[in-house]
Length: 420
Image 1 (cartoon, rainbow, N blue to C red):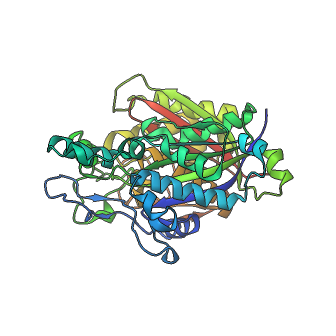
Image 2 (tube, rainbow, N blue to C red):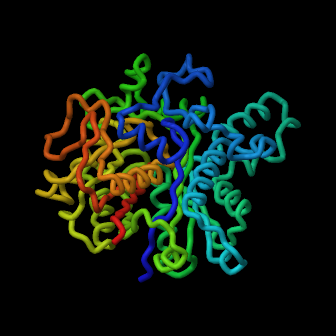
Image 3 (cartoon, rainbow, N blue to C red):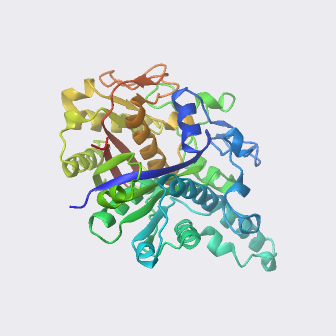
């Protein structure tokens, strides 16, 4: 089987724009969750989110016009803008640019979104309902379609290989990376640009998740304390926006061009809960099987894992179930590795969560640092697993597992290891 490595990464989150900006803030314990000021939240129970802060690129903030032409910005929902910016970073980081058509044909894109252009859909629906149908833009549909992140990346760079998009709720980013790796393993491409993006923090998105009673509402006055995985006071997740994209490459292809290899993807597992449209299976069976499948594919034993980047959304039910599933998979080794949830710092990026967290997992390998679980002051779990509470921990990290679970009972786990 062809081996697949990571040669480029790109990030946009509430902690900033760029991989190093995000990583430095994350391991320093900074928090990107703030009160929402970009739209009216007076009638919403939840009033906070991990939104992308705009500002000068030199300051580590997000400047849309630095990534997308101002004319095109008007034709894109923000999820496309964030995904495109992350992809540009990743491609630049990788140093890969096809020199001829054969190379173009062997380079593909697989960037998904859990929801897509929800803000554009909401705005245009209001126009229709208020009798302003003639004001609907001809770019409304392509501004909203999930696959248009992949489409824009393909068009920008001339990548003519597989052009695909995954939509599996909060597992999207992880599924995109895993599926893209398999495309390379099966020799349908040599290089794949893969990941997820999301920008669902709008009135409609917030209202929907509030109606489902999924969001935190107890910390509106102290937003930075709201996302608190495994803590007794957690009361729901916090929405986040952004994008995470990686460049995956067949090993010999990467070595031949002297690419900087960041990590190797060695395991990918999937499963279905077959339980409920929004709630995970109470016994954690789906999560357990997913992790076991990823470890089996990686051909490594559970006791070889050094760090787990948990799905850890800060929901009362989900955190407990994932914790129990991890204990089932790792047994006595649960006392020896580190596990944390980076959603405590940036919120839940839905379809982008899995790819953003995959990047954080790779950086944990690179620097030997497990990022912290912020706000974990009073654990609701038994203490058997070191959840990296409050502060990052330095430790040699060679092999990591990253979990992503989504509505509909869809699960994905990825295993990365240091390249040797």
